Structures are given as C-alpha cells and as structure tokens.
Amino acid sequence: MMPHRIIEGRLRRAVQTILPAADTTTVLVRPCPDPAFGDYQTNAVMGLAKAHKLNPRKLAAEVAAKLDAGDLCAKVEIAGPGFMNFRLRPEAVEASLRSAARGEHLFFEKSDPPRTVVVDFSSPNVAKPMHVGHIRSTILGDTLSRTLRLLGHNVITDNHLGDWGTQFGMLLAGWKTILHRDALAADPLSEMERIYKSISARCDREKPDFDPALRERARAELVSLQSGQEENLAIWREMIRLSQAQFDTIYARLGVRFDHTLGESFYNPRLGQTVEDLLQRGLATESRGAKAIFSDHSLPPQQDPFLVQRGGEWMANPLIIQKTDGAYNYATTDLATLEHRTQIWNADEIIYVTDGRQQLHFHQLFAVFHRWHPESRTRLAHVWFGSILGEDGRPFKTRSGETIRLADLLDEAEERALRVVSEKSPDLPEAQRREIARVVGIGAVKYADLLPNRQSDYVFSWDKLLSLSGNTAPYLQYAYARIRSIFRKGEIAEPGCRGPETEVSPGAPAEMALAKHLLNFGLLLEAVATEYRPNFLCGYLYDLSGLFTRFYEQCPVLKSEPAVRQSRLVLCDLTGQVLKRGLSLLGIEVLDQM
Ligand code: ARG
Image: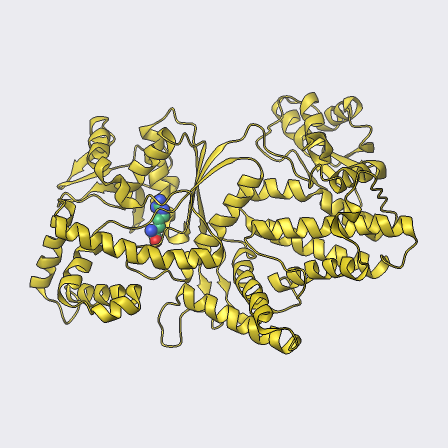
C-alpha cells in the first residue's frame, strides 16, 4: 500500500502542511457538491480565518499559492466566502487508476495511527428469540466493524448478551414447574419464551391471573441463582447454551462473527465494587433505600439527562445503580463493562449499537462515566436506530400480531428470492438456484436495513427490497455480475488488466466521471466510520453502478480498438473490485453469474 497514491489523502496532507492548526478531526477535503466548480473542496481556511480574525478569501489565496499539489490539480479556485476548490489533472486521475490496477491500493488508505475501537452490537437476550429489532443492531454493527477494520483500526467486537437479570427468576420458576421437555428439544427458544410469558403474566399484579405465591417463588429463585446455588446455576447455564446455539445459527447465516461474547453475567463479580467506588467518590448517593446518581447541574436543564420536565417543573431523573432490594441492574453492568473496556482493552472509542429507545440510558451512562473517570480520553458513541415498520406503517409484526423472528424473516427472504431466480433462470441446476437465492435473499434484507438513514423508521417491503431495479442489493449484485460477464464474453482472465504494463486513460466524459467516483471510495469509507453511517456507502455504491451503466452505454468496451479496449477493461475491473469490496463491508456477497 502506497498511501501517497490516494489523491484525496495527498490533498488533505498538502492543506494540513500549510495549515497545521486546521481541525483534522473533521473532514478536511471532500468532494465538491457541484462538479461544475471542481472535484474536491475544503473549507478548512474559513474556520481558521474566523478564529484568527483574518480575511478568509485572502488567507485562502495565500494557502493556494503555497500549496504543494501542482501535480494533482491544475489550479485552485477560491470560491464564495473562502472555499478552496480543486480540479484534478487528468494525469493525476490516470496515475491513481494505474497504481490501483497494479494492485497497489483500492482508493483508500489505512488510518495512521490506528485506534482501538470496541463495537458492542447485536446483544440479544438469553431465552428470547432474536427479533427483527436485533437485526438492525447486528447488521449496522457488523458493517461498522468491517469498515473500521478495513481502515486499519484495531477493532474488538463484543456481543453484550443479556444473560443476567430479573427475568431469570421467572424463567427458573417456569423451568421447574411448567417446562415441556419435548417442546424444549424441538425449539428451545420458543419453549423458553412460552414459560417466560406464562410466568410473567402470573407475576403481574395488574393481570387477572396474578399469583402472589408464584411471584414470591420467582423472587426466591432469583436470589438463590444470584447467591450461586448449584442447581439454579446449572439450569441458567443450560438456558444460555441453548440460546447461544440458536443465535449462532443466525450469525452463521448472516456471516457475522464476534471477538467476544462476554455477556452481562461476566461483570457480575464486579458490580458490588463498582457501586462502592461510586459511593465513595460521592458520585452516587443513597436515596430511599436505593443507590442512585443525580445531576451535577453542570448542564442547562434542557440538556441534562438527569432531569425531566413534569408539569412545567424540572424533576430529578436519577440513574439507579442498586435497587432497594439490593439488586444491581442494566446500568450497573454497563458501568462495570465500560471500566473493563477502557482499562483492560484500552479502548480509544466504544460504539454501542441499539435502538433509539435506549438514548436516555446511554446519555446517563456516558455522563456518569465522564464524572467517574474525568481523565479518560475514550470516545463514547451511542449509534441508535429507528424501528422497522410494516407496509401499513405500524410496527412490523406477523399477521397474528406476534413479533417477527429473524430466522423466519431470513427463510422468507431466501424463498422469495428462489421464486424470482427460478422464474428468470429455470434451466440452472437447483443447487445453483438455491445458492443464488441465498446470496440475493440475505443480501436484500441486509441492504434494506442499511440503506435508510439509520435514525429514521423504515417500511419493510418485500417487493421493494428484492427488486432488480432501484437502490437494492440485487441491483448492485446484478451490476457486479454484469461486469464479470464482460470478462467472460471477452475471454479475458481477471488479472489480464492488472499487470505492471497496464495503461489507462479515461478519455470520454462518462469514463472520467466513473474514474473520479472510484477515487472517492476511501473518503467515503472515512465518512462511514466517523459518522457511523453505512447508508453513505449504499449511496456511493448505487451511484457507482449508475455511473458504470452510463459508461457502458456510451463507451463500447470489447469492440473498441486494442488500446481503448484495454483502458476500458481496467475501468470495468476496478469498478467490479470496488463494488465487491464495498458490498463485502455491508456483509453482502456477490456472484459472478446470476
Ligand atoms: N441486551 C440489550 C437489549 O436487547 C442490548 C444491550 C446493548 N449493549 C449494552 N452495553 N447495553 O436491549
């Protein structure tokens, strides 16, 4: 990898050399919003000029005059209040394509220095089936992890399994009284869910079947589990084992792997000490028998996660870390988890991927952590997402109103894709049709999840997500297969255009537009990783396919004279490589033939 081959990176460093004070944590050089003004743009000068009370246009002109980038851009234009616009020299574009064709890079560079990033995602709860809500966490988290890893970071993925807590009291009571062994053997998660639902309904004071004795029993089971009673521990371990086996089948289907699955229970031995420490430092206080953390009033009330407005008044909204009955909770575990990740794993950054309903929890958690360890430089991010809606605009449920299980959803995706494939290519052998259906079906579900801005709710529509036209995974997979078919038709072995002698000169406008888009791949990956937005990558790949289609319509490849043909084949090959790599970051596979 030769970093200086990446044009955007070179421009960024050139600007940085002249403006060492420019804020490098934000994107310095980005594509020009309007290509009529240039290929890249920076607004670095404007911020600096403002900070030092200088004339931004004058400063921009001075920077432009000193900029060491003459081989990359013909001239630098100053626009508006002090934007600098760069227009690439065609030779610079060619040089970058050529080095990519030689396999020296794929338009991105590794981050220097790399950071240690913990990604906490998926995190389903034991004894409950994974539902569609967990799919978003799994898929978003997986994409972010893959992208950060490709950019050279030291990524630690951790599945923070919900394997501890009050639900086990009811599960244990149910396991011992109403468990059907046969049902458990056939479908463990459904049976565990059944016993949980049945017992919890009878432990609920508001419900008609309320049974105070059973409630007492559940509480006693929990206490004995927490005090380490062997029988209960053994049942609890069995519940985890059965759940984990089913989660693993799903992860295998999705192609998702974790470095760790520590789970909430891992932190159990540290919870007492965590609360003790917070009390000693005066961060937590005792309040009506519970231990809780209150506002330190360092923020205006509107931004203070420890306050809520009720009836026009600001009331305390503390974070409880130990309940009146002595039990620790989700927050206590998360605080202990944070210490582990920062102190043992030396995380520079921790990313939590969960649905939007947990925003308050993470606001409070992060605020407490900063008060607890003010010296910590770890960046904490809650990457939250909206819900999946059915086509009726209501939460996505089965016809009978049950939550949809991830396993059923994936089955249906593959079945539907198989129908489409069998219609289109009835002559393919069944095994091949099934393999295509798997890749297309799973890919389509993942893409539908990644495409919208993650914070908006999105409507789940089978017809839309499996469509071959529009911004879908099948469309992008098809674009890739079409590129491969050019090579098949021309009987050109893949590396045929990846040699040291490779020449490439994108002459036609459609070729140049495609080439310049390829050059932006790395910049885009950086944006995905810093803003935690995989949808940027979806948009990029969709545009790439569109630019490729235009190029392919306007510029004959196989029928051109040898030099042009060679150059165009390089563009096809590089487009294919970027498509494949980009999709792989989204966890989506490609096929040479569809
Ligand atoms: N198990 C939780 C749930 O299903 C998600 C856990 C997220 N991670 C964390 N460290 N709190 O809602």
